[in-house]
Length: 113
Ligand SMILES: [Zn+2]
Image (cartoon, rainbow, N blue to C red; front, side, top):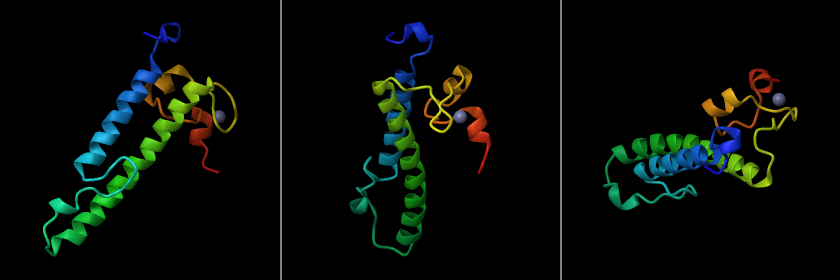
């Protein structure tokens, strides 16, 4: 209820997202800082290398999302949340509700240099 004026509590949405990403990382054996924690669970077998490769690719994606979520949380702290990182214009609330961790407005996100 902290952000009642804005209608949506983006901090709560982001913290939920963050918790979900951390949980997914842990499920595939990674700490939230990207370190492997699952060595003990992997038996020595020819599957290990392939499975680890897949897990690492997935972990890299999850960590990228986690970085975006954490950057957005920092922006809430700084009071700059909801402002496009590229053009400085406000990001629409519809977009923020759909993607709370986004750093770009819809125009900038749809333009790929
Ligand atoms: Zn923009």
